[in-house]
Length: 265
Image (cartoon, rainbow, N blue to C red; front, side):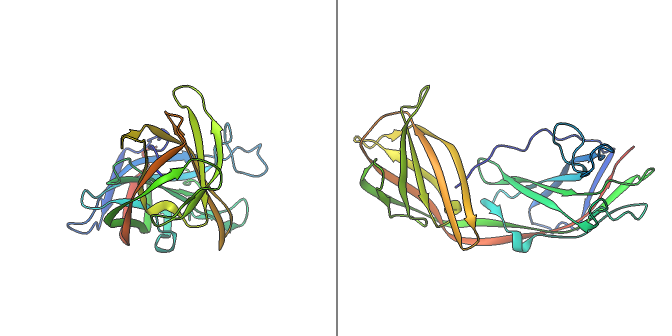
């Protein structure tokens, strides 16, 4: 599974943060950031203020559920139905381009029990506005029914096929490495590996070879995607056992959002 660190530093300019209508017994939701970036008048595209940062209003929420294991954002179950200030400004409207435009992202913690959800609206509050309201839902894919499988005698050479687990892959590239790493192995496939919780390499004595993921991503068009992940191994070996732990069941947790944020300026 792809893992991320927390989002970059959040500029918090809020004097008061409020969240309502969180289901009892459901996930814990907390507003942790509000960032307002005015567009640069000299930028004819209206996208950036300084150093490429995009203009707009960004609200960041921390969502936590100790009894769930978050995987990724469910785009189909995520929607913002309204975002406005107390002056009646529709913050979802990109006035410079004459269209609506929203950006959102989910950043899952290492243990999978919490995530930061960021929603950026293209417009900024009107002068004198004191509050921003947001209505919508966030859908988070959650995994359960964990399983572990192994493929023994897996040759670390180009073309070797990993057939166990939910996302078959093959070795696309073998490279040298630097620092404490001795070799890099790039696996690729056409099935999204997001349900993989952990993939480890075991040496001849059954000991886990220390590794880190140096690259992960996807390329192509819907229906014709290619998924790649590069592992940097601390040992140079020819053959390993690959152990894959994954979630056999995936469900979407839907979190309703009804919040008001006091901007305090």
